[in-house]
Image (cartoon, rainbow, N blue to C red; front, top):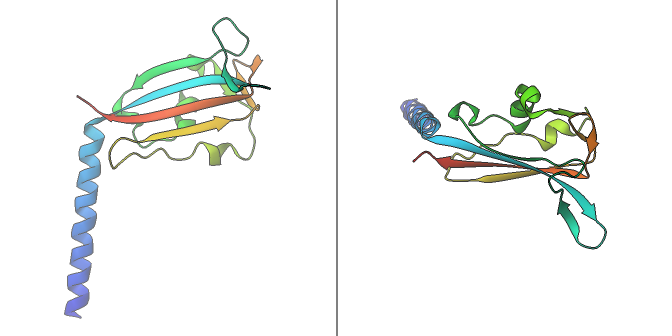
Length: 138
């Protein structure tokens, strides 16, 4: 019985330390979000859509710390008006835009969304690349 209590105490202490580390990281992290649209060129493969071309998107912004640990979908959905971006709903959406946790050092997460991604309800692109990068606040 004493062994079980010691193990339970150790696990509780470990959980508390992990939670404290997470809270500390939340205060010292910011989130850099980059979104770019691409077409599939038959010879060269993925080609970024240039400015003034149909479907162009080049979003590059540092977000405040409140977005740390959220999903890309949550950010895009909450900022739909500002980004002028909507998504056609399809079953794989949640899976492709799942959690973006970078708790142990800097991490990059990439998503490629297929042709069902609509930009401003007008343009369709072959795919959209989303890059969330977590960096310590300096």
